[in-house]
Amino acid sequence: MAKSAGRSKRSDRGKKEQLVAYLCMAPSIVGLIFLTYIPLLVVFIISFFSWKGISEPHFNGIKNYIRLFTVDAYFVDSIKVTIIFTLLSVLGSMVYSLIVAMLLNRKIPARGFFRAVFYLPYVLPAAAVYIGWSWLYETNFGLFNYILKSFGINNVMFLSDSTMVLPSLALIAVWLSGNLIVIFLAGLQNVPAVYHEAAQIDGANGWQRFVNITVPSMSPIIFYNLLMSLITNMQVVTPALSLTSGGPGNSTTFITYLMYRYAFKDNQIGYACAISFVFFIIIAIFTSIVFATSGTWVFYEEGDKK
Image (cartoon, rainbow, N blue to C red; front, side):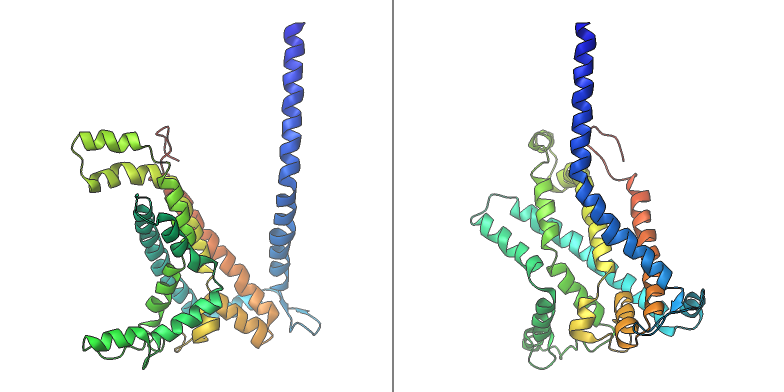
């Protein structure tokens, strides 16, 4: 009887804990439904209509999607531009933020100050940051061209040259990756020091310890930062709105900027929704690839792969 009563108490306690957990999760679930899933469904429905926003919508079936893949000359270019920018930004952000995090993880003077300095760009207003960088990139009087002139190099049109504009904007995105630095820093502090000490005793150098200890121990953090950076940079729009307006030519007409132009400049709401839904599928494909390949390189403490 005593054992039965003990089991009953544990069962009741477990049910109460489950109820509390569901209640705590309820606001997030409600927010996810009303702020993500329902709007996504509405966008999908509107994509089958021709709608100017103020006039009555007219159903036109899949004509928006047919136009998107057969007639629209900007859409394919916008996909290419977005993917190139994303690759440059994600690769640069991951390398830069990991290096800075490893430096800030050392015992250096004013370490807290430098951590705040590297994180600060992330919390600044994005439009203000891009406008500030436009002064640095200015062809005639910008700081970067002034430095290049001092070395006898001709002026570079960072934002007016179609071959330079994407790397220039990606550099700004890398500089804005302070959130990745903070997450990497937290992960580095959880890497067991005993592993490094044992490897050092066995004669491993710094690079060997980094490759064989730090990277495997940090792989879940690297996976998370990679995924978040990928999703964030694929949805880039601020550089085009603040600096380039999609130019020069179509070299910075990102998919999000194309949606903005069709929806709010041309008042083609239904067509913009079709682009938005296709873009959602593109992001889902890329994130699925990251998840599918993570099983070969993401490790956990117990040694099992994901």
